View 1 (cartoon, one colour):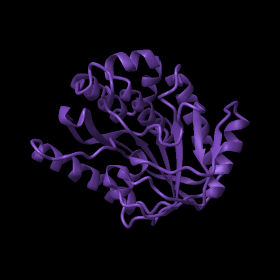
View 2 (cartoon, rainbow, N blue to C red; view 1 turned 180 degrees about the vertical axis):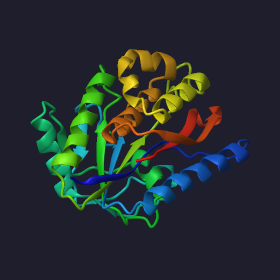
View 3 (cartoon, rainbow, N blue to C red; view 1 turned 45 degrees about the horizontal axis):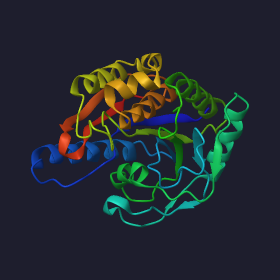
View 4 (cartoon, one colour; view 1 turned 90 degrees about the vertical axis):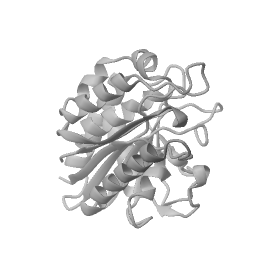
Length: 269
């Protein structure tokens, strides 16, 4: 069996620090620590569970789950991220699609994915850039209805099975849940941060109980954490795919100016 050597969840936006200098500095320090820990684990492949922001998965086509299968990815460069290529891992990606298909999941395969900040902001802190091949798994929170947390949970179980039973014994896998925490986008509550709910999510995952989040419906999460808060499902999937180890919250900062409850958690895999 392959080994899951690192797993963490992190928010994935970085905006102006004006007026939030201290909070922003703590966020950057926390992201830096997560990247340091991930690099220290020496992964051979990074599975990033993330959501696209209408750059690739747009109104013309809406698959619930999509896997980027390219050998190389070139970022969009949004949020000022450098447009520098980084490697993919075609063998891992296509194998994941085949394995999950046998478990009842129809994952779309995308050759020409151009990753946005959901992928590239976490990569900024995993140095050096491009040192680890990346497989992006997109959970489509923009479709209506969005994938339900229970469905995401079951997919995460299949991902863990793929890593443990199919991948080469010597392979070292890192898993990142990217997005969240609470945020409302382009709706009247934009700028609201649900601090109590965010802390509950962090505590649940840190306790090794990430699967409990699958008891919510997508509507429940959207009510409590916003339409953007559906990205919390990516964190839940990370936890379940990693085997629900315990973890620790590395940072949390409510930043209404960034429209988001900014958080990061590292699992003790």
